[in-house]
Length: 617
Image (cartoon, rainbow, N blue to C red; front, side):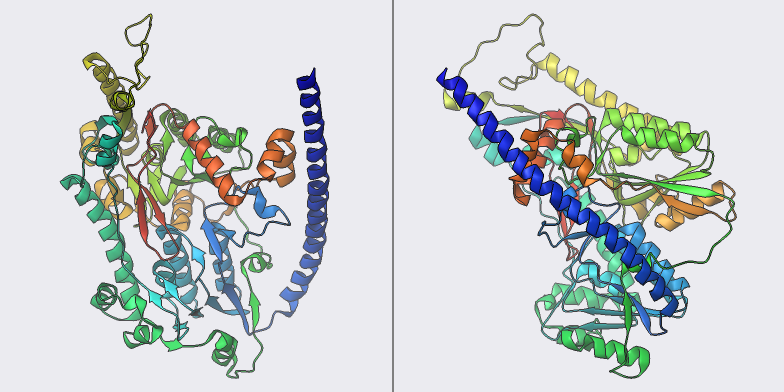
């Protein structure tokens, strides 16, 4: 009876606490929503007036403090009024659109860059840079200001007519590096042995668990693509600054990035040193001839609301997005507050709807994924093939479109990739842990009773016998054969030809084009142009199918227990929760490259190994 009353009291207390949380949260959201609506109305009026009175000395300010993503973040906390996170998410397509608006609008004279705190990948940086080059073709100027520059931020800023930096800042062009950790020695001490099953000489993700250094094949693979990335951006930066690439190489080799910006001025990476407080005067002098002159600045969201001239169109192109890990079950179904992006069978529905919509003449699918579940990848690839039979579909590859990301792309009419896209990785591998050594070290024993010979195959307490190894290897090889078949069908190559460029090897888009895995090099606009060509459209409008999460819908779709638990979490705790959910969902045959590639704000490359999981990847 006593435990009964404790349970009742605990439940009542939980309900009371949840009710209090919901009460404050509801009115917080309500206030934010009302404020947003009022702000939107007021903002619309201001924007209308701004459009009419927009003066000649106006500029578009690209101060992209935050993350530049393919689509809006699914982190609903960014919409919560009391969220203290300073990081924002900018949508790449909206940034590109704002630059195009500035190019077309005669009242916007220049673009000002402040990218010090912008985080993005190589492809996003390349596309923004290309958009700025198109902007400059209109005869308008670009000016870059920053206290310090990271590699990718400088790569974009290098197109500027003038590059300004703080005297006490630095130009952090370091080159690129890959650091691979090997765990064989640690696993031996723990008594763990990894049983490896793979198809593909270059599937290097298994090496940290079986070797203590890079194999020659894996070293060649890493040297090729990070060398290609570095040589590409180094050459483009040098060309823009009218200096020899050897100057930039020496700057990185000799560690000048740890010196103040006067060194960057000496080697012509920076034009002038300007303190932050003097930026406005320098810009005013450039645009008006008077350092006291008034400059009107518009940011991305404001530029997007400027009125544009109506254009008659005879068609419509829909841009869909496939970003994140490919999963069979969306982790957000159990964890609505997940901040990561996932690709699920919902994409199949979006592709089907696009195919059935007679108002849509062509589709561009923007892929930014390192892959994942083979089952979902096959479903998406099949729907891409069905859509191709109705209307053109063109793939636009983002930063990464490898393994499963390439799998879902291969059956489209055409594939467009950036020279810096990480793609390919056509291969399958599996890692199955054997804890029999650990069991022995700990003095643990077990006894199995089973009704079939392989019923205990995946209990991990004993190593596979010869028959079990043969079954698992055949399983992996079947997945690889299916992968080869899909690429062969989509790329008009024999399976032998695909296998020759497959074997799990990662390629840059530039190399993939030479090998026949990609049709054209370029960004999202190139893919849109290709879709228009295939659909025989002379004029067209573009619609971006980007769904933004409704915070209220997500929040009130949760149960009370989940709500109270997640509201008590810090941002770091939410990330750990997400990681646990991702591990939980990673099962079955996976099509994932050997490394995930993360580029931070400085442009450095981090090659992170996949989690150690009892599943095939």
